[in-house]
Length: 143
Image 1 (tube, rainbow, N blue to C red):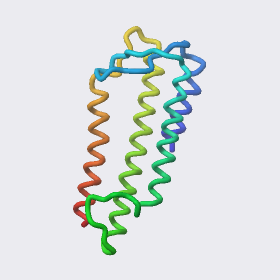
Image 2: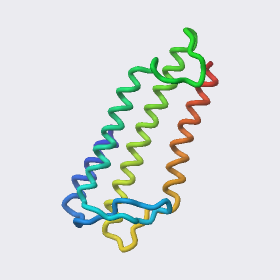
Image 3: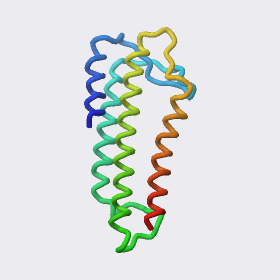
Image 4: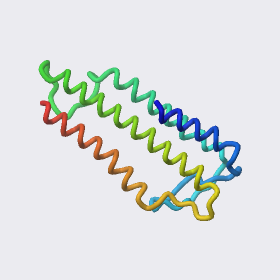
């Protein structure tokens, strides 16, 4: 929840200080390759809020998920707990990744050669897939 407040806080703070045109898209290597209106600053907080809300709603119905193991009366409770934990981690990670992107857009909008860095996509992918992998392994162990 703190991440969502941070997303909106950055957008509010940046609105009055940024130029009208800011970097809004980055290549895989982190180099800015798209420029647009600073109104785009509101896109990440809105998408972040939507993802957070959707994953929160979905996590209320773990019995409807697809699982990598057969759900029985004996393992249902633990499997539901594992699935909900994974969703909680993923929604937090997504929001904090959005906070980082929003902060970087704010910071990079005033530099000559805006660049997120070549490491951004690989590290972000590793974080997301490592989380999924960890919780899937937990699901298999809790059969």
